[in-house]
Image (tube, rainbow, N blue to C red; front, side, top):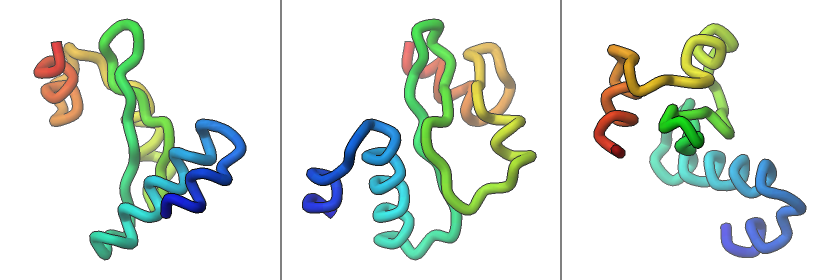
Length: 77
């Protein structure tokens, strides 16, 4: 993983490598990586194996959302 990360050309590729490798490590079929936006919302920055509907629904989750992601975003504050 470290050699692939070292050869990544940009942040998007780095995040994709990280998600792929972590999914493989855990034997998971799908997952995503989220970063905290300036407004405190969680933003999906890399994903693998998830549906377009999932990405559309959760691409940006505000701190006021009732979802598990929204609660996580609130807990970060």
